[in-house]
Image (cartoon, rainbow, N blue to C red; front, top):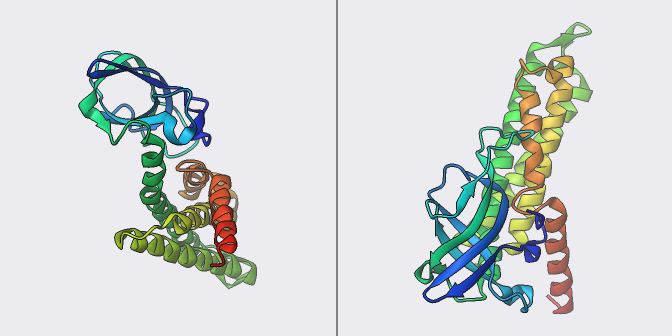
Length: 259
């Protein structure tokens, strides 16, 4: 549960016994944890090895004896998501359920982010678009000083900034996804898309609340939920800080290679 961004710090173990692996440990913040009928599990199989070779991936049957599914967490936002902790106590996993070679789990998990980060980013773009749509509609309806608030430059420019960042985020999502579809490495662009879209979602949701004014702070209007839902985009599938670490390392590596 304490690993978070430090994937290499995961402590769940899998010990080989005959043709099975015995898994012990805990995982936290598992999306669809109470609904899934199988789990992808990253477990430490060689405590003495470095992170790149210490972990192995497994497909674990959700009905396996020894699995305890925790309570549904009540989160700040995205409350329709079934998020739980999962405990593994002497859970036996057949060796045939091992994903890839022993010690290659970390590489497999990191590679999966190249697929999932653009997907998460696309959801961030969708939330940002919804925030702008709601704010625009409200700005056309609400009047102050004898005119629609969209006619006030202060509000109009907030909407323009939303549009700028939404379109930029959308294009980065498309580029990251297109590269993946062409079987080209997209790690750099996937991280840019994830960081940009998640922060755009937060900024657009926050500005939508501001445009709604006091009504935006009220649960009878939709934008306060968008603001709560947006926050997790900067955290899951790698925090914004982790994305910047990946991006900056890519820049440094390219410069050293003269690219």
